[in-house]
Amino acid sequence: MKKLWLWTPIVIGVFLFSMGCGGGGSSPLPSGSSSVGVYVTDSPLSTYSQVLVTVLKAELANTDTGASLVLVDATATGGLTYDVTDLAGVLTLVNVAQIPPGEYNQVTITLSNSITLVDSSGNVTTAKFVPTGDTFTLQVQIQGNITVQPNATGTLILDFDLVQFNYDPSTGLVAATVVVDDSEQGYPGYGHLDKLEGRVTSIDASNLRLAILPEHSSIPVSIQVTPLTVCPGKGTGSACFNFLNIGDEVEAKGTLDLSVLTLTAVVMHSDHSLSPTPELQDAVEGVVASVDVGNSSFTLQLSEAKGFVPVLNSDGTLTVQVSENTIWEGFTGLSDLQAGMVVEAKGQWDDIAHILTALKVEAKVAGENEGEPPEPPAGCTTTPTRTLTDYGAIPFPEFKVEGVTLVSVNVGSDITVTASNGNTYYLVQNTKLEVEPSLHICVENLSSYIGQEIEIKYVMGGTNRVALKLEVKPSSESG
Image (cartoon, rainbow, N blue to C red; front, side, top):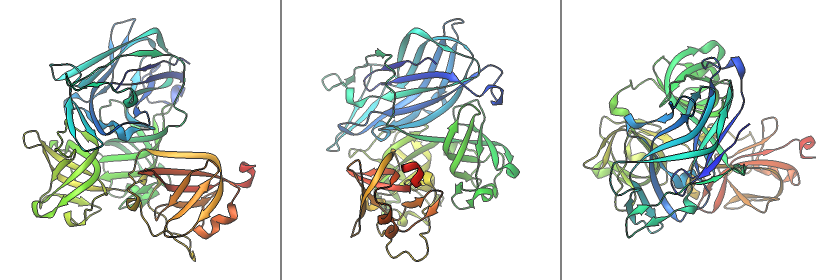
């Protein structure tokens, strides 16, 4: 296995490229080729409330042939724009690519030559990497080469290192430097968000399986549905295939196995009501900041943009315009929106008015990769009344703590638990409480498990840790 780490302040901070043994002939890749997952992340600390960076392309150079292999290419749709402050502590999947065996010594990243900065007071600044031009290219030379073995799997991580951020207000430029680090320090505390979007290319409902061609990729990826996979609006398991057609747009979240190019879905959305159309190529996702029913619009604090480079309002938000033609999924209309809700809007970006006209607005539930909020067991005397939005929680980054024990349970206006790591976790309506294997329990049951090992998945609401799932491990494991 060969690992290489590189970091550069704000521009692609850390690359990890690890090519190890893979899945052999079980992969649908060309004979001998290897598969790589391309992720983005950020270190957990930042002094900015928002930093929007647009990735256009990522390439790997072959030292034997001089050929350039494309790992990500989103130039045709305006790039992939991320609020990198929302990437803190989580590895977010961007693409899946194939790499022929060989020696590689250079990674080239092309970014839009525009960075939007929003400080903690809401002041918005547009910076550049270089004084002129629409794009900025960073070439990273790899000392000692990366050797890609046949039928291997690997990971390339693009880390926007905001801790090392270097912005010069006198020039309006962000300085990019590269430091090679081969210490193999890793990302042991980082969570993962494996999410793929693409068009359905085949359906095998009898085996709960389908294949999609992800955006910005030329490699089909299989989506394995399980009886527990949640498909909002359809149900679970086999119900996910109701009305599903080849060509439909699908978004699946779960766990990606690169060795066989299969994502096992925990939650999957499919959209057969909207055919592929250029009018839906522009998309944004974020937290609703304000709603203006009179002007048929709302504003978002962005977490992600696709298909265009967003230009923000003076308060750091982006305006979304709706109409009588807008399709609402999870809402009846604009009047249902409230500040703090997480939504995705698809439509057309107006680069002059700096407004996205939405043809579709969809509700995004924080922690939805854990499925829909479960029904509590019958007869529970204590159930949380508060929601994720009551604590200002957003869906990512998602974190996980394990190997800790339950110390106490506190019931009041807030329902919380404390763990042996010293942290407090808030329980809400969405929180799943389970004892392995998947036995749902009530809040009042938790006190009987004090001292036993637990695993908690949670998101942040300000400084509060809000639990998506608390699972009590069997006594044999905790011992």
